[in-house]
Image (tube, rainbow, N blue to C red):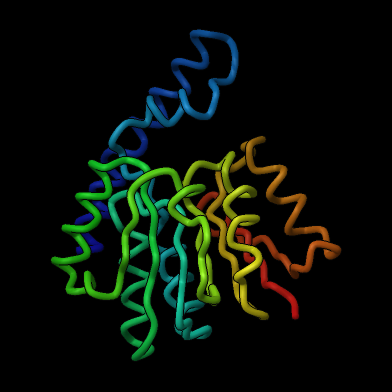
Length: 209
């Protein structure tokens, strides 16, 4: 399943990114984040295999009772997370996806991978679907709209357990990510944060006690 989904991403993602860059060149300015995502369309915009393996390893290490994902897309990162949770022998994953079509495909892919029972996939705006979490969050993965990373983190921050890793998939030189990076890289905000050179970059932040 992962091999097929990665092949789909490798076929579709470059064309989606090219549509955005060509439109921005035509306009002579950077598109707004909603406009960029509209042009991306149904492309998976998936993490790389290496980032997926990092997710799997970090999840195994943490062995979370409850993990949260922002941005399932077609379920590639969701499969890595859920497979690691299954290997741990306990825990569950709460994932989110704004687009109903992608959420439906992710649900189907998880079911075919034999992981559907470990994942609760909520469809809609993550600032609403993740509101009011009651259980501690032992691990979080951020891979949705870049301009919402900080808002989503602040939403789940009160529920982060001590030592919880927060993994953020980055887009190189995207100014929308700067508020998030400033937040997690400031020790006063309670994180130990390090940049990892995989894919377009991954920011690994650990919630300090």
